[in-house]
Length: 122
Image: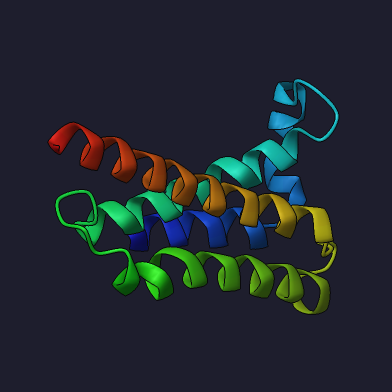
């Protein structure tokens, strides 16, 4: 599933903007694309965590690379590639900021979940 999420993110990031003209009407508010960035990277990080079995076992340390670094680095590389290789796409710092925000939110949810789970087990 994480491969499919990565593929979806790459397609949406590198496809010509004209491919999405019919969706411009769906943009509910200014900056709607930032919400899309948040949701995509939140979903990618969540899928990576579920695939690793983190919710079944207490394995936070071994998730650092796949669950945190991979989506953050992917988001940064996508922005750089958009700037240098995929005109008329452009790199935006705030796109990457919202990518990172989605990833961090999944991690915060996981940490809270783990604390609640350990408190209930006592």
